[in-house]
Image 1 (tube, rainbow, N blue to C red):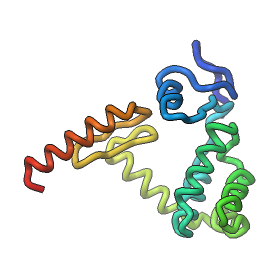
Image 2: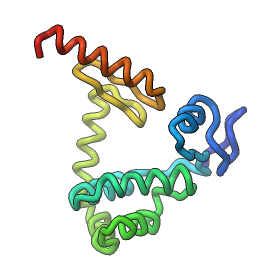
Image 3: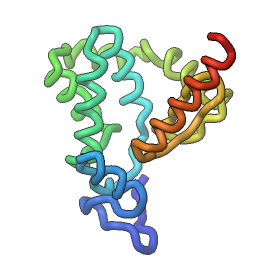
Length: 158
């Protein structure tokens, strides 16, 4: 789906602005506004393939770079195959699994679980047993939540 620009928002290909842009800049990340919102189901299934083949982290990082830095469409099978090959996976085997829907059930289960937990966006973080938050957050926020969760677990004798 093509993303029309909202008032004050960067044009496609330009650095992301606002809170997200500030968080990215502080973290040393390059995040450009994507020209469209990709249908990411194929990318999620491809990520499950990479996970099963021991290349999850490298594949995931490469897809993030492809989308945020390079403006590539994560719906495009060529992008997924290129990322697979770049991290040492067999792109033809990935394509076979995507066509067969091998990882469709796993992705559907993950999406159902996320909805049951109240997750409505990404990234989402669960810390301890009761803290759930979403979106780009400053380091200090993560630190505060983790420290609070540790204090609560210590107080409960866990």
